[in-house]
Image 1 (cartoon, helix red, strand yellow):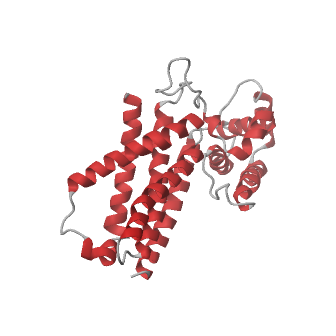
Image 2: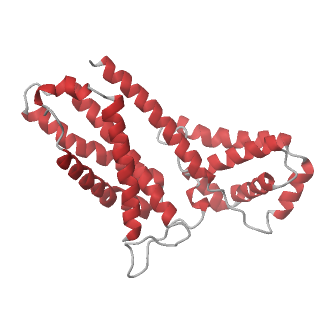
Image 3: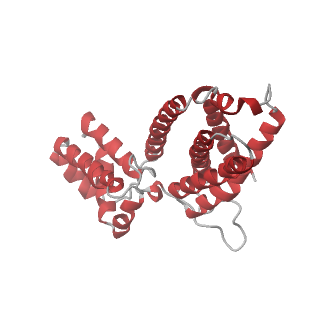
Length: 286
């Protein structure tokens, strides 16, 4: 129970903060200009709070829990985006169908924002759940007959394009070598920084370019990580690389949790870009 309360709290805080940012800063005045003739002089805060509580509960049950069971952040984000579109469409398209002069622009903006907001809050809830359950082989709510396997090592969040190679062992051994190189005291600062960023990006569950985009979605997998490793190899002393290759089979280094911070940075970049575009869209529609 405590586990799910923490996950719910993380998702609720993210949902509330982003929605208040949207309503109070990015789209400030937009709704009043579109449907001001229908709006009350002041919000009904009791109804608003009840909506937030119930909606995030729906995200937890229908999005985050299945996403954690699947074990991938991408699955949670996609489920959240779809859930947001469907639920916001239930409100806006119903009004579009039965009310006179309901603005089409408002429906379009609301559907896009519902997708972004719900997907983002779902991602935060998933990350909270992953953090709390780190080191366990199950997450609560799936007891009795065995729990559902959960991520027990940071390598479990290596992006899908790498998984086949990781399972085959070749890329895994190579990454182990470079992890050791990044920790070796003989590695200069410049290649160490390059390796830390490259390995953290390799462990990130979110791509800079989403994999759903044909061709381009896999270019970062095929280019950025190998390029970072190649660049580091040009600056690392040969004796350090030889020593680390010899040590790679002795232990089992794992990808750093820094991949989560990289994933968070990628999400923030996408959110910033979307907010800026949405702000220009809202201004253009007024």
